[in-house]
Length: 258
Image (cartoon, rainbow, N blue to C red; front, side):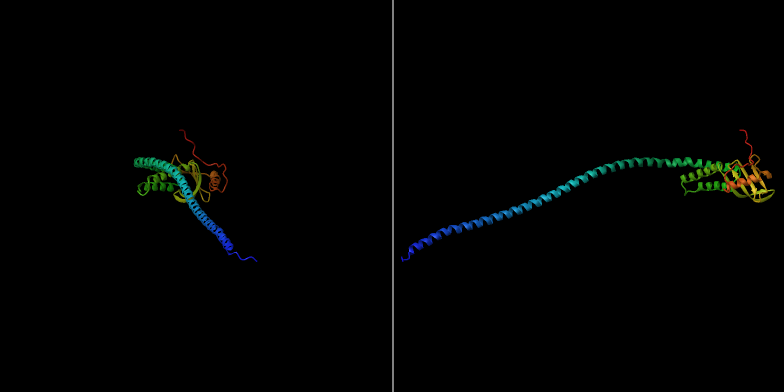
């Protein structure tokens, strides 16, 4: 066996050590590079997240800005309409002020007219066929009392006066039956009255034995014979809706030549 060569072993070990030292240094450099790259990657990710947050916030602000612009446009349109309404109301206020200024003038003019209308109505009732005389006279009296009240508006007074005229006008177009009293041969008796417009005012006693008609020319009641008794009764039944409307022969004054 050949003797162990220590010199050759030392040289081999030295060579191996020389080779391993550069490899260890290279591995350490790679780790540093990888760590550095990972650090840069984390920084990039963090930067991207901050950018994304800024973009998101920016978009939110942009959306709010656009919404605000739309709201502003809507408010402009609304304000324009309100302006037109205000102008219209100002115009109406001017008209109302003018009308209010004329109210007193109108009141001073219409009150005397209403007074004349009531006086004319009172004379008309007094000269007319005397049906429902007490009721019609009371209506005129209430109108006179109404004119003296200061808690009733002129418009309401005028309405009441025209209403009374309308009632009187309707009497000329209707047929009516009602109960009242009349003086017959010095005695007051309750009878049934039949009014046909303003053409005829006839009464008949409840037993049907006594009848009479108002004569406007003489201003008196005229007694009627038995020949009209059945027709008067029939007319009363029509007026009270006990019979259907039909032709009735009643005594009426002859028309006068104008």
